Length: 311
Image 1 (cartoon, rainbow, N blue to C red):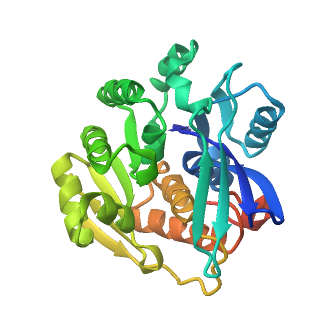
Image 2: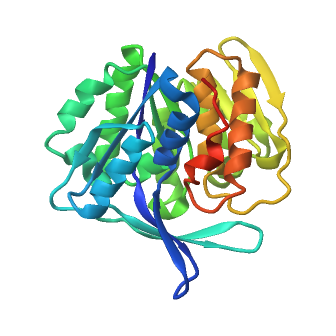
């Protein structure tokens, strides 16, 4: 059984109209991917989440729900002085979303400074892959980002694969130069890059997916997926010299695109970690994302994905 550790932050989610009806849940890009991966891979892949939460009732509830989803929480640290972050999603009529965040003092932001993080470091040496995103990096203080990249570099040298979703959020960085420099360092050790064309254009000014793929190859990435939304995705193995474009079936009724990329990553990784070919991995990603965007919220009800199994 392959083991993957997904590192990042999960927050309390409020979904609805300000001063109107709202639903409370939880979400965060890496956690969303972890949950959907655990759902669709079953017992074929060990899914472990790396983060920090508080010791409050909401943190306890998150832990219980992640465990019920099949996500291991052995590497989730508990912080007695901090709580989870919070975000509000507002949707327009087309299902596109805008966010408001309260996360500057969240437990996850300071996970690398936790007195027990050394135990997490030791555990990561025994997984097959570590997955993180640009948000996982952006929430950390600068020195902790550097420490994390150094840790991932050491793990890479030991044979652990590094998977990175660039997931660029400008508001989380001091400026674009800071984000680009941090990404450059991580891309040098990235085995599998999972990027979105919109994010790459926003951060790097790429004119099209060809420019994105060329830049990722020059940066040192071994394999890359460029997600193109309703147009499907491109996949390129720079080591083997192979290239594919995989189409997706358009979804007529889009309700909420919040976890489109996160769920695609889950479907793709469910295949990748079982050594399936790139086309099958991509189709799994499109199938899962196509279901998720027809529901509200970052993590949709489990029954909505019960019919999917990529094991």
